[in-house]
Structures are given as C-alpha cells and as structure tokens.
Image 1 (cartoon, one colour):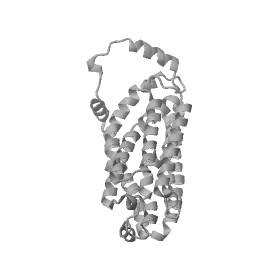
Image 2 (tube, rainbow, N blue to C red):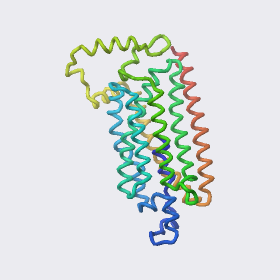
Image 3 (tube, helix red, strand yellow):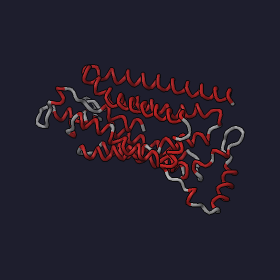
Image 4 (cartoon, rainbow, N blue to C red):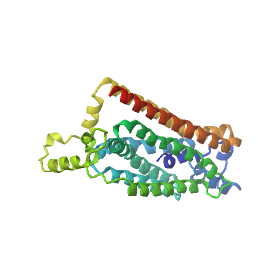
Length: 313
C-alpha cells in the first residue's frame, strides 16, 4: 500500500535545470526515463494535485463506506480485492502515456487503499488474542514505514543511470503488491461473517467461531426493520457523538494526516532541489530513518499499550 502510493514522491524532479528540458533537448530521453514529470510533461502544481487530492478525495469518501463494509462483508475478500486493485493501478501507471492517465489511476489507488485499514485492523482484533492486539496492530502499522522506505529507494531504482527508470520502479511496486495480495488470499482464514465476531471471543480474546456461526445463522432468519438499517453517515455521526475525547482524537488524526501527507509529498522533491548531488545518499538515509525509527517507535508503542491494557484490566 504505502510503497505503491508513495513511490510517486520520489520519481519527480522540479529543479531549474530539469524544468528547462524539452522534448527537443539532447538529454530529454535520459531525463524522461528517470522522472515522471519530464516524461509526462506536468508542472509542480499539477504534481501537488496528483500526489494529494487525486488520491485523498476518493480515499476519504470511500473510507466511510469501507468501514461499514468491513462490518458487514467478508473482510478477506475486501482486503485481497483492494490490494490487487491498488497494485494493478501502480502497475498500470508504469505504462501510462499522459498526466490524465496518471490522475485516473491515482484516484483508483486512493479508492482501493481506503478498504485496507478497516478490514485489517478489525481482522487483527478478531484473530489475535486480546492481550496482544496492540502489538499486532503495531506490526501491521509498521508496514507503512517499511513501504515508505522502499518508496524512498525508488530514487536509486528510478534514476537516469538505471535500467528501471520511473516506469520500472512503479512496475516493481505493482508486481510485488500483486504477489503479496495473492499470498494474503491463500494464508488468511475465511471470514464468513465480517466484523460481527468481536463479541464472541473466549477468555483469551480469540473469536469463538462456532458461537459466531450459531448467532449468525439464527439472526439471518430474523426480519430486519428499516429503523435498524443505519446509514453510513448516521453511523459516523454516532461515533463522533460518543464524547469530546473521541472528537478531539479524530481532529488530531486529521491534522496528523495533513502534516504527514505534506511532508511526504514535498520532502523528496525539496531535497532533490536543494541537494541535487546527494539524491542517492538522501534515498538511503531517509529509508533507514523511516524504516528503523518508524518501525521501532510503532512496535514499542504497541507493546506499551498491551502492558497498560493488562494493568487496567
């Protein structure tokens, strides 16, 4: 997910000498091979839209429905399907021929990525013993840092002196995503009744599937009233109305996401612009910082949350 959607940040160059290159320049083929914005002829402003709103618009809207679907549908199918969709989008982006092509594929990627987190976190909650849920969630979250690290290394694989170029870098991310999605589909157990199993856990916090099946079978025979069929917006409103703490938490997430997205989108182009001769060093150091420090902080946080949960139980 993170590898596929973040590679874009590391495959553009808006330095003055690069922007002066046209299709008639002797070095055009070399730079077009390395940088997406040169090959597809788009500006920094267009890149800003491509990297942000083109992805987040559908991502934000679809996230509301993704959460609802994770409550009521087979989460394994949701997870595998979304993984295949964003991976195929990344692979297709590697053969795109225009800025509009990339905009469309980026939007599809945002739509698909919205379904990953709700399905993943609720599956972890249901399949992992309660005392290890924090660590399991942190392990899943560490994938964001590892994916960003791999995306950072796209500077090396997508450089002008490499065989891959920007198209090859995206193709590698897409193919690896397809392979991982296939593996998840094989390894992950079947989820017949969606996110309705959390109340059917045993004393260790593991889902009692036999009980869940009985409850699901009996409830499927009951008539469903219109009043019980809550809409996505009413569910979201109900969550936000829980308490001030919940509202402040969501507000904090909003600002954190905005800050993280801004840094992610513009840090690599800035460093390439400010230190054009050190792009390779930046790629390696940035990958190490994000990978090592990000994973370590996430895992420590997960472990601490599990210990605190034990003490408060």
